[in-house]
Image (cartoon, rainbow, N blue to C red; front, top):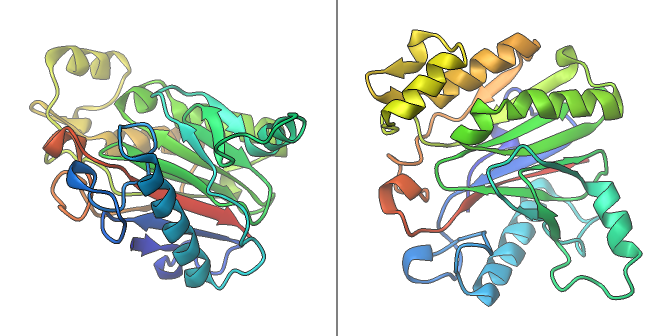
Length: 264
């Protein structure tokens, strides 16, 4: 169910945060979504996705020996390839004021980033080639979970999230750890001329574009270097190459794997 967890991470192990990157197996979704699809917004059967959320949440608790939060949902977004971030505690407060509980208690709204300093709340972003990113402020016990495709990367989503965390919590680059999960890599990511032109206009170096193949990991590394974010772990897996993962580029009609994270 998990391809990689913070238990295996030399960088994150021992910190008051845990994360898990799922693969595509161990759920109940059928056909193109088989089997551990975690997205409600791509046409899969709602009950199947709900079952998958419950399964992966329980496995997450078991993996990290968590018993304090067994009745909280997975908090997730309707992702839109924006740089919009939602603050979890503000959304939960507004939901609490509603006369009726939301139909999907884990749903936070539209956006591509969840930011929080609340412990024992599992947050989730889903991908099928885009970059799932965790930014953790170890000093101020805060985190951001980010969905970053090409549009998000080119629009500077990590810098915008870091700026917001600095404003909210006083986050400093020296205190941050960054994890970038599996995503499409330059071996498989062919792009057209208009993307090449935008890449050049944004000032990225030639190392990030070999022929017509774009290296988004290079772009993210350059952006993080400019912010002073140096403590970084990058998954070695290409979602398009690795058939344990969903890939939109490889399959088009497919499910979504996820990055889950929770502060302790």
